[in-house]
Image (tube, rainbow, N blue to C red; front, top):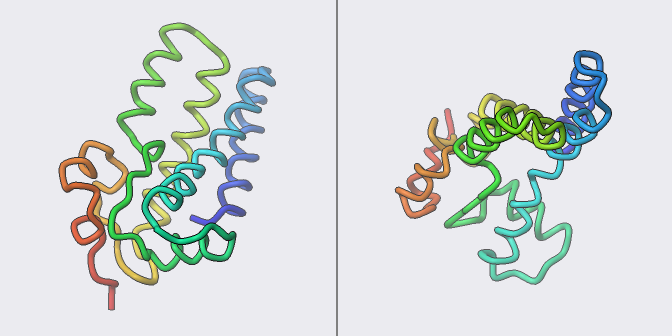
Length: 147
């Protein structure tokens, strides 16, 4: 999904979190993590692209799926599941909010990024363990576009 959609969804989630809990900390954390989880795309671009950074080059690399390998360490159901367990065990509002925002982001990505213009993400794409198992290689993470 694109940034404006994640920003709108994060704002809606934040409102729901605040309405349900009355916690501004949780609500703000949910908003921020729902949007800024995508910073791992920037890290991958800087590490893997070999291109000089520009906003245009970065978005083209992501949208055109120019990558041959991709890490996306924050886009991980395992990471956020562990964070959720820790957050609820500690009863930490900040960590609960961060976890809720990231979970919302990942769920929307799982649903919204199935069929992209240059390919179809495999069903296991948002599991870090799977990406690791296939060596983070595009050829094993993206299938041919749906005709």
